Image (cartoon, rainbow, N blue to C red; front, side):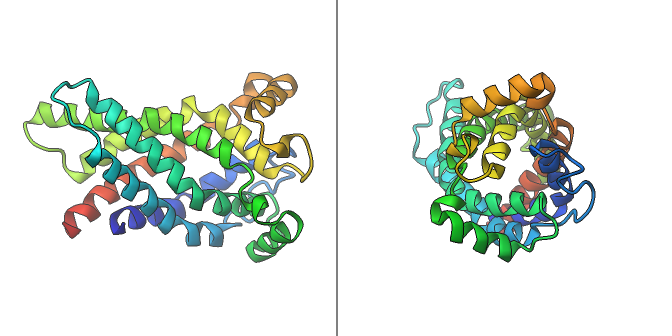
Length: 258
């Protein structure tokens, strides 16, 4: 819990400006109308509050599911174990992540409005379900992301450990996390764009209903491939750096605590 929480807070606060740029690039009104480079830390209180419990929930679930799944001697079972554990971790973590993400993204594209004002406005007009708008699309983004990132991270660590003859250090684990995260970020960007559009859509609109395929179809028809991959560069940069900081900090903190 502590290792995951510390790692989550570090990465979310350090890389918040890149996340704001990515959100504004993906927003329906466009980068400059959504705020451009102004108020780059808009929405950071929501992230600061949600980051620790979100990351802690993921790693508690990930490690516990991994420990109860069968550990067969066959090497092909290992990636499957990591995939299943990461998927369960994301489903649980999204219960905390989505409300925080909804408030954060709406603050990022409305830098003049405070986080508290956006939270109260969402609750007043949409209720609790408004804070969970985009839960399905977030899970549909996070599970494929984890299916790519975590098995690749574990495989790279195993390969590096085998090459040097001993278990990887925390900084080496962080390098593996950066490569795994960057690759996973690139291939799942269209799902991230759909999630952003659903969270930012006006209440009652077709996009706000949360249909991921419809959102992807709408983006493809109006903006084509470039629309589906809007914000891919800052997303890859943030998640590569995030993978380095997040997974490296997680390993180091766990070493210190255990």
